[in-house]
Amino acid sequence: MKANKIILYIFFVALFASCENELDIDPKQTEDASITLGTEGGVTNILTGTYALAANGNAYGGRILLYADLLGVSGSLNTTDLRWRGTFGELRQMYIKTMLSDNVIIEGTYSRCYEIINAANTVIENVDKVKDPAKQTRMIGEASFLRSLAYFDLVRFFAKPYVSGQANTQLGVVIRPNAIYNFNVDLSKERSTVDEVYKVIIDGLNLAYTNLPADNTFYADKYAAKALLARVYLQQGNYAEARDAANDVIENSGHGLSQTYAAAFNHDTDQTEDVFAIQITKQTGINDANTFYQSEDNGGRGGDFSIRDHYLEKFSSPDDRATFNYENEANGRILTSKFTDQFSDVTIIRLAEMYLIRAEANFRQGTAVGNTPLDDINIIRSRANADDLSAVTIDDILLERELELGMEGFLIHDIKRTKRSIDISENGDGSSLLLYDANNLVFPIPLSETDANKKITQNPGYNN
Image (tube, rainbow, N blue to C red):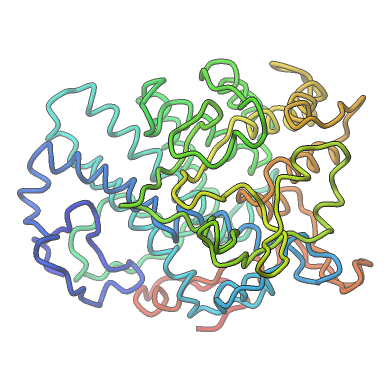
């Protein structure tokens, strides 16, 4: 790729992983960088394109949610909450925990996240072309949010988990602090530590919170940044900061819970519960949550990932969430009703998650900031017409996360941060456990990346 070429709307690079390969690019899609990056319209288009990159199916258009479930279930028929029956061998590798470094689906997500990061860096470095200082500030905030979002999922999938209370010097992912315009140069770089990556994520989200307005239509706003901060702090076990961030969103964002559980899903315009959602249309974006979780009649592949009794048995009765599913008449599989509209938005952050974070963080800290843990859990349960609890334990709160947020991209991350094991024994008797920090619960650094990047270290357990 020539240094003086950049693809408009940020479809402008092969992969960091395969930067030595040239792309066959339609000339209509490219423009001289001095024009694109020299005008306010060009830089604004790049920011719009960053959202478009995030909406791709192999990023926040659905698959990043799917991966967390595939890695988090046991895969043993008698015990697994979800069963994978799809024909994609690369996804089955995640389900049975035998990923390979040449897995092209993993490579695609790795590369897509770095495209988002590079696009965001490009906006920040060229935002001086924007005349209005307030618009400049907002654009920096949006780019910082998207960059932090991408780094967070990279470090959660491609590195050993963050462990609270210790120096997290284990290798994280490569930090790219500056935009890359010339992919013909040697871009080799070693991975930074997990601690260093989390610092970049948190610094970026704090900047986004400061720079963004309280309302920014369907783009990221300050409370989307604070909500993601709550999620990041929870992953770190920084419960005081997680509690305060979640409380800020609940108390000040203007968002509310949808009247019913069903109303929180399957809509193409943001609803009151949506703190941040990826916009999907018939022209742009792919809802891959629909693709892999739904029947053919609802736009999916028939239910590649179906619900097992083991999951349904976790619900008490009554509970609307226990019946928010349907049987695919074509094959008898029980499928979630969360993604039945193939052109609906993919919600990344719901307000319900903030209640669950506040409840857990308050419980662990022995505090009641904003509300008591019991009351927060009962707010979530009452919305689902489930009976109130009279008391809560940490196990109750973690179970409520599984019931409320199931199939929304949380499972493996919750397992890792709480240091739980996955029981992969055939009968569920605990005779075979997969520990939270097992090598095969971490994605391999893609082979194309290790081929191109001579300084990068592969994750343990993988051969190139």
